[in-house]
Image 1 (tube, rainbow, N blue to C red):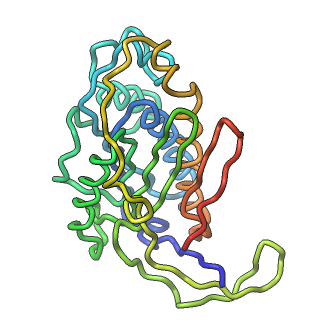
Image 2: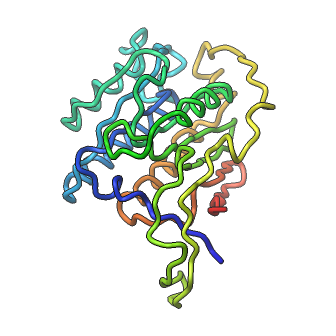
Length: 266
């Protein structure tokens, strides 16, 4: 029986703006923030309260970031989170916040989006979310964790329910499938997070250091891998808000073969 997930009603029909934490605003995170601005604008026009985003990053803009990430040479030396949030607030008229430091877990959000470079950072965030509370419907209630990661020309997007089992309308539902025929689907309240799907403890976190130039950065990663990962991740978020039902919880992206495979809910 195919499995589906009903997005928590607090996300679809909230009492206030849905809070979002974006952790890491470099190659992928800077693209994600821009897409969140578009999502927020569309949601507000559709009568939804919208989003309140907080960006976390302790890194500063370097010459190697300009062009591949959403920074200009005039912003070299400035903090990435502060710079991006300032530009987005000016462009979209939002009042989003930035924290020019690493995420410490003191504040949790309804949706946590991680665009970090290391497995160890993901494991630290996993520990924070495991200890968080999702039972209360408030601005700090952790409902979902969307992780985006990539290598040189491939990557994955994983949406989990932040180690919680969220309420579903029933164990099974009868609804129309993609072929137009009525089918019975199993409702799943718990979506596995990235560290539950992959063994992050055995991933080598060796740091090769920052790139000194854009040319060096491009030798390590394809120019469009970050924006591709961000677009697929934010498309999944948009589906959460607009449709409210998911039959996938992520995707595998490979730019070398130009293939994208959905991550079916297990």
